[in-house]
Image (cartoon, rainbow, N blue to C red):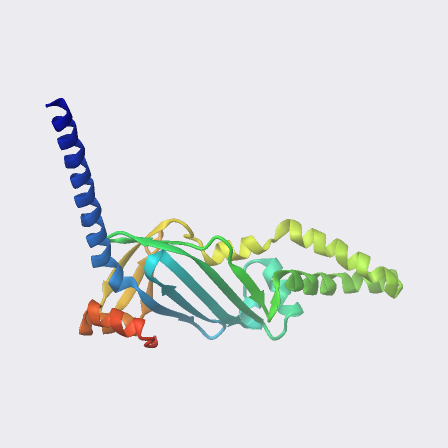
Length: 235
């Protein structure tokens, strides 16, 4: 009898666990289809134009691409004197691009994005090249004043590179781009748009044709088209 009771308890526990997992899986499936796909956000003004694309795939896989120019006027108008100096060093402004792979999870009202190792490109080069360009510009007047020979110029530039790297790292820049990285952000869906609200209550609207297509044709048909290699575009 004791053996039968033990088997009954084990079976009951396993059944309850299976039902809980089934309920959780069903809840996730009910939420995920509306977030899956490619989302597009644009922040534009006279002095900068930032284009962002966020891709949320099945299995919690996420990919993001941010790109846009920051004009010389935008840099010169900054309250930060260091940023103002960049306006003289980069008369054509800065073209910034960040690409990252990571993960995403969601509840009914919060979305968590985690991009642990973003790749940063500035004016087509990596962050080290960006710092070297600044260091070279800052070192030039010193080299002229000291009338240093060409073979000593690299040492002076390297000194400026070291000083700059003490105050600015690649992570400093990417942390600004992903201020909420790894933290849940409130979201809501409105007529095919994903609205993300940061801790300060500021909304960012991400548009997607994918969400509208899923809603019109149903999730099952959407999955079949995606599996068949259909391409979904966003605006």
